Image 1 (cartoon, each protein chain N blue to C red):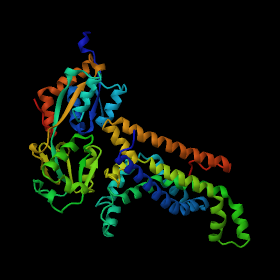
Image 2: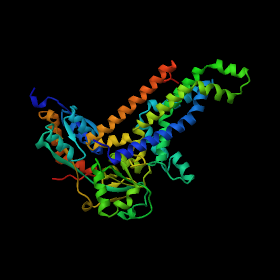
Image 3: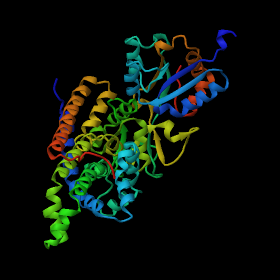
Length: 237
Length: 231
């Protein structure tokens, strides 16, 4: 049997905000390939610590650019495999239908007690949310109303359960096929924050792992890109 | 080396939370433990099991359902709103409520064990000497169960200090209000600030070790095992 058809297996560490598209990517990839891809979801910070300490991952889909870059610098990841697989889109969202009138106006009103954002110390969506507030000159005024989720999934939870009336969440969490699933929302204009770039990198131990390499090229293919876009992300060039 | 202002705020908040929760738990836990120790009701098993649930449930599960319960449509949220208190998620009071649920078995079980160890005999003797039920509780059971109270208080306090999953779910990471030490350590790790994380974690290890040491020292002195977990 020729070597190239031997089924290989790759284990992929994926930032939890990318759970849904990653599942579909793997499903379609496995349907057309002999290789197997196992997905592990979690926080990028935790994955970074685990990979630095020898965790058996082959690919790392981070929620930011910083962590893959640091892994390259410490020799654990392969430099020329680094690429931006998705750009996150930030949305101001509420479960209440009338609250947001497709503009940020509600943020300067008294119609809410709590605004949920992701923690800007380590979550890229949190950094973007603080930039938006700061560009709208609202960051200082709203400080006492801010509650911080550890990641964008928890931030969504705070708003979904109604404990926070408003929150900056990922478009992928509240839109399906470009339609708002429920509640009300304002899609933040791109000029209000720097891009939320999510980078992926091949880890050193997988430099000759066919499953990992072929899965990477599938993610970068036209079909891969359109799957990612269908979940509310933007795919750059 | 040195703790940042945010670290110090987190340490002080954690101590305040653990103190409040321990006092409330001793107050409410003692009658509950007394009832569990003395009763032969058929509800003893189910209630004991209910109290022990947080020992088994993943804290994030408990936290998630607390978040829903505290929310505007949840039973606790409806109650607090009708009392004019608003909703309690992301507040210190919310953390106190969550911690009481979470640390309940750590207080009730040592107390129950201690009350059971008192046995029927001293209470019967007191009864024949004319002591009423309230008198028997305060002058016989309470003094004899003193080591149990010590263990319960220390464990309740320590367990609240070590709480993470529940606080993470219902806290919202507000400095001085809900950002406790365990959450601060987690944030340091997530932000790759391992030095700061190490410092706080070391403090926590030393604290926890001393706490357990004092409990085991107490047990040796009283020749009675109060640190065991059984309904």
